[in-house]
Structure formats: structure tokens, C-alpha cells
Length: 86
Image (cartoon, rainbow, N blue to C red; front, side, top):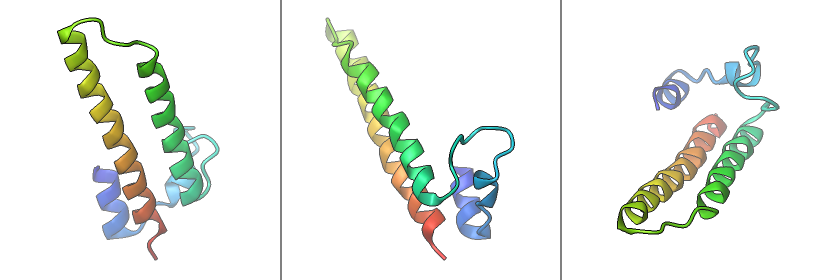
């Protein structure tokens, strides 16, 4: 989250696109960053959906994790919006 605030207030997101450490493979634009994030979200959802809960505790865990994944998707779009602003 600090990264997003810094990108919005200081406008310096270019290091994401010149990532020499390989943290953002294949990312060279805000659009690619969004797609990279959404691919991770989809992968997390796919993994979670393969493991249906079998009892009350697992159901609670499942609901918590699905909310976290939904939050990841929302944050991905927010990050894209911040990066795309002039």
C-alpha cells in the first residue's frame, strides 16, 4: 500500500517497469501490471475453488480467504488507476 501512495504522491512508478530484480516479470506498462496482478488473483481463486470446505471451520477460513482474494482484485485495479494517472 505504501508503494501505491508513493506512486500517487511522488509519481515515480517507473522502477516497476525497469525491474532488474525480477519482481514484476514481463511488466512494462500499467496495463501489463494490471494483467500480471489479475493473473495472480485468478490463480489464487482457482486453487481455492479446488478445495471446498468440509466443516464449519474450513467454511470460515474459505470465506476469509475469498474476501482477501476479492480485496487483491480491488487493489489491483486501484494500483492500475494510480499508475495510469498523469
